[in-house]
Length: 96
Image (cartoon, rainbow, N blue to C red; front, side, top):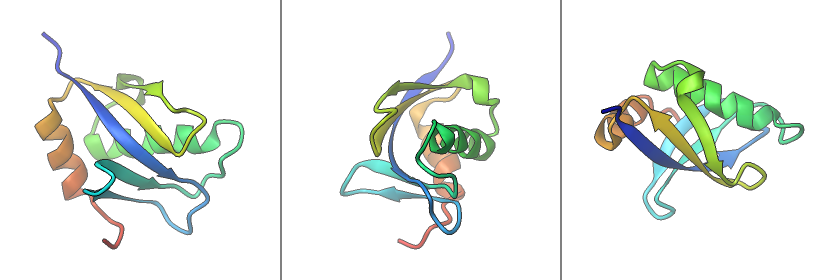
């Protein structure tokens, strides 16, 4: 059985620098990318950043909601929820 996790994301496109942190109030991972929010550029950058931090191919990540919103949902195949949180939390790089 392949593990699968749905991750809640709050996108911050057009940021000065890329980073990831968890916002417990929003119950979502805040993902900042330098790519602008046009033509899917920010969505692609978010997938690439998360895949890199999770050490997974980008093909294991799939949008399941909110692609045109700041609040998004992303399915991650191959990792359990606790492992996703551990890997993203370890990679956290935005000030709290």
